[in-house]
Amino acid sequence: MHNDTIVALATPSGSGAIAVIRVSGKDAISLVGKHFKSVVDDKTLINQKTHTIHLGQIIDNERTIDEVLVSIFKDPNSYTGENVVEVSCHGSSYIQQEIIQMFLRSGCRMASPGEFTLRAFLNGKLDLSQAEAVADLISSDNEASHKIAMQQMRGGFSSEIAKLREELLNFASLIELELDFAEEDVEFANRKEFEQLIDRISFVLKRLIDSFAVGNVIKNGIPVAIVGEPNVGKSTLLNALLNEERAIVSEIAGTTRDTIEDEITIGGIGFRFIDTAGIRDTEDIVESIGIKKTFEKIDQSQVVIFLFDAQNNIDDLESVRIEIEKIRNKHPQKPLLVIANKIDTLDDGQLAKINTTIADVLLLSAKTGFGVEQLTNTLLNLINTGLLRNDETIVTNSRHYDALLKAFEEIQKVKHGLETGLSGDLLAIDIRQALFHFGEITGEITTDDLLGNIFANFCIGK
Figure 1 (cartoon, rainbow, N blue to C red):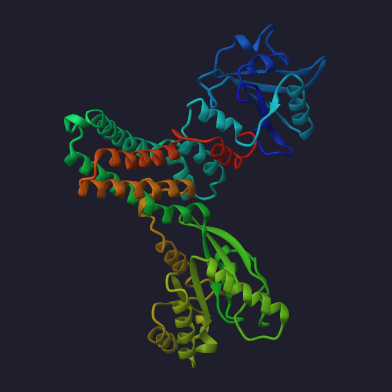
Figure 2 (cartoon, rainbow, N blue to C red):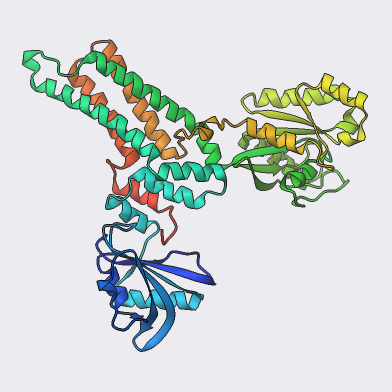
């Protein structure tokens, strides 16, 4: 299957200034060369050096389709490890399809999603975690997710796992050797050194596992639900955060009947803000559905912003405090930011009263923008960005996280076995299982189903 020549559009579909068509396989250069006429007389692609670019025309029989630039990358020094040709043509959808259809008639096959990167993995150009990072890099939409994907694609995560696996494999080999000399009752593996290694592996695995809490939210964005009674300024706050009129703002209570979501980047971290319907007793069926969705969004969010109208509630702050406690009691694990909105209408004495009655309250005016910057800084402080700033390895992939958890479990079994004097043959079983889960991450151990699931999520042409 992976010995044939594949073709795909490597740039987004549709019209544009330039489009890139990628061809990979043993016969890629000769196949494209049959349809390429250089501006330099008698230049044939197959005789050109790797990593060179050539100007010419793509011709189908006697018909010129387009003037193009053809880039040549000869194996093994290419992305896929095979011969690769990239044809840069004009971005007309018609031209793109004409060239691709011509290559298909000449013996190419349309590439499957992620097949170029799959071939890079199979040909040893990338390990599995690096290949997965390619997809993360393409989908990164903020500084933090881009930084993590780049670090993983360069092999930071892989090298850390590979080093642990190699050290564990060395001791596993010694323990396996002991089994061959069981009758002589000898120990080749120093148990004290082995215990130290297991402790070191446990420490690193625990750090990587803990980093997933940060990595997952950085990769997928942090959902923040904005909740409160009707007409307290939730939609105005969303508009102020997004710096655009995203949500309808009205004096009429119950304007927001459904949830409205949008994303912004704060300090390189993606936050997904959810403007919810105001919480109140109502007989309006549509509004009731919106309020039901509000509670669902609170359950799904990782941070909750409770907004109240400082002007209307200044004489009844105790009822506000009770509502706050209800949310805290129902969602004790979620960070809750309490915001007094519309403070531009209050005097200093009233502001002091709010600060005294409501603990850790943020004072804000969504209408004027006062306090919005303090809110964004507070949100950013909820995320442990220290790992990111220190260039530490951060796990963002749920498959890696699952494999790390399983490896950690097996390492703990090995540690317990060493402490209780477990026999070498039983220790070897747990060590082999830990090595298996390490190998799952980097791709030393794979199945066709696993590869199919991973690369099916890639775009065609990558």
